[in-house]
Image (cartoon, rainbow, N blue to C red):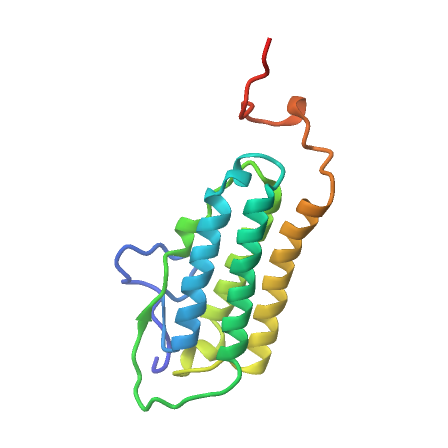
Length: 177
C-alpha cells in the first residue's frame, strides 16, 4: 500500500512486532530515534546499571541526555518543512537496546523510551518529510518525561531493595575480612 513504511527487509534489524517499521520518511523522527538509541546505550552501559543505585556522575550525564532529547523533539515539532521528496531512512535496531540490567529503574526508563520510539515509528509524523505533529509530540514528550521520572525517583529516594542480601547477582565489591 502506498505511503506505508517497510516492516521487513531491513538488513540487520529485528522487528519488535508486526506493523512496527524499521524506516521512516521523516528526518525529525530519524534524529529522535538516533538520540533514543544513544540514551538507551548510556543507561544500560553506565556503572549505575550494575547496581540498584545511581552515582551522581551517571545521573548528571543521564539528565543531559534527556534534556538534549526533549530539546531536539521540541525543535522538531516547532515547524514543518516540505522537502518535495519521498525517501526512506533506516532507523536504529531498537531490539538490540533491550538489555536487562540490575538497576530496575534503568530497565523501566529504557522500556518507556523504547515505547516512545515505537509510538513515533508508527505515528502519522513518521510518514511526512519533516516535523512532529502536535498530538505525536505530546505523546512522545509524556513518555520521555515518564522515563526520566523513573531515573529521578530512584536517584532521589532510598531503595529498600538496595541491600546486599536481596540483590540477585554477585556483589560488585566483595567485603573485606
